[in-house]
Amino acid sequence: MYAKCGCIGYAQTVFNKMGCRNPVSWNSIIAGFGNHGHEAKALELFEQMKELGLKPDSVTFIALLTGCNHAGLVDEGLAYFTSMNEIYGIAPDIEHFSCLIDLLGRAGRLKEAEEYIEKFPFGHDPVVLVSFLSAC
Image (cartoon, rainbow, N blue to C red; front, top):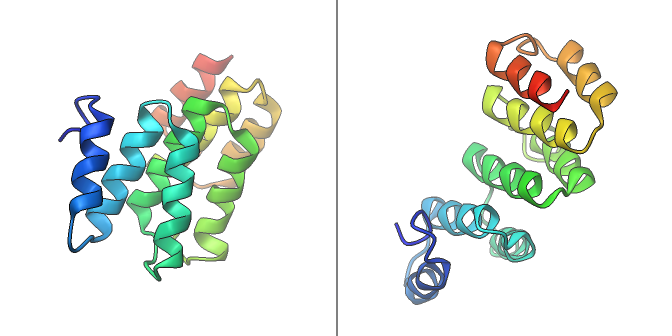
């Protein structure tokens, strides 16, 4: 709740005081930092989560891709997108794909975005196409 309201300091305090953290709490704090301009902290928390043996889920990757998008971390975002399936066995869905197209488009990498659109079955979804067109 605090992170959604922009009170990231309070969100971090609550997270730090939690006795038992679950994937929802990890995803919430990662997304909170990523959405509010603290991408380095979001990525650091993701690494901590993995070190503790917690497996990221689909929501974790939406948070990471969104944070990378806000920060313009294109190569990092591409690496996370690729690792979803290759390392964690999570097939990207339309939300992940839209984040990727938006990330590439904002960076001016339109040809690359177009290649991904052609490569994935939901590449011609209206949400994806709007992301692509807005970048153009």
